Amino acid sequence: MDAAQFNSVILPLADQLFRVAKSIVCNDEAAKDAVQELNAKLWENRSQLDKVQNLTAFAMKSMRNLCLDWLRTRKSDYDVPLDENLIASAPNPHQLMEQKDLTNYVKQLIDKLPELQRTIIHLRDVEGLEISEIAAITSISENAISVNLSRARQKLRTELMEKSKKEKI
Amino acid sequence: MKEIDDLLNKYFEGKTTLEEENYLKSYFRNEEIQPEHEVYKTLFHVFDEKAKEKIPQPVDEKNAQPNVKRFWKLTAVIAGIAAAFLMIIWVMPIEKNQDFAIVNGEKIENTQFAQNYALEKLNHVSYKLETNLKPLEAIATVKSRMEPVKKIPEIKKEWKK
Image (cartoon, rainbow over all chains, first blue to last red):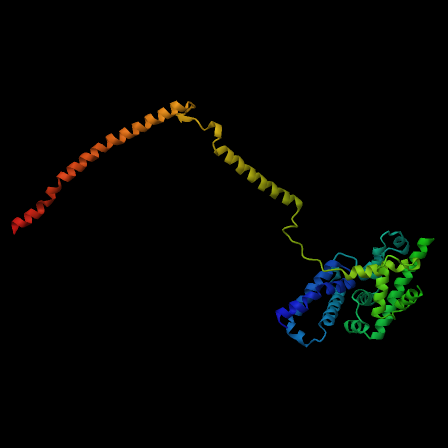
């Protein structure tokens, strides 16, 4: 792959890769850094990219792996609550009920999901990918994707229903 | 509305197709939503919002300078322009004060007197030039009369022959 092909195929994926990264690391700055790091790695290995059939799926899979590695090793570099920290510091249902901004409440609910469920929800409901594509990106069977997708959505539904009931009381 | 209820149940079980999910999304973008579905509206709104998110662009450092710095920079430019303007006004003669002359450090505003004085001085300069050039004329006369002397060596050579 030459520079022109790289610019026309890989660089336009930046927004999508950023969203995927952000859904995993839950931090704008870290997600942006991850995109830049991935672009640098893909550029270094651009000669190998010609062999890849689905570049979008490959880039998203690489992004997820990079972010998972980031969560394991470098999240302390960013002074933000992430993943487990986010869950620990998340407001309790009573506090959540008091939040006027329903949009932020829903975003927090999604961020509270386990990483895999969060990623699957994002790839399906935000990026609109097929189950088979999500399976390729996450290296998990399609059945496991469906199960995790269902669990994630059920959790969101339960939380939303509970909140609605409490507000009516 | 049973159709939406069934689709929602299917959706939360993770069994909807992309097409059905797009149908649900477009339903929740609509203003006319059944009251029992309002609880899910924000969820689909958040998905739409996330889908529009773009990678933050690098900040233009020139435009991102603190306001204080920009204020002082602007002030310096304005002060420079003002100083230049004042200098021009100061250096350029003002129209109504142009009819005067400075003679021996004194300001002479009488135009006729100034003109006469200038004429007198010019005549004086002319006279000086005329008188001072007379010695040069004398030198020229001497020079022309010395011309035959220059021929003496040649005459001597002819005599020797």
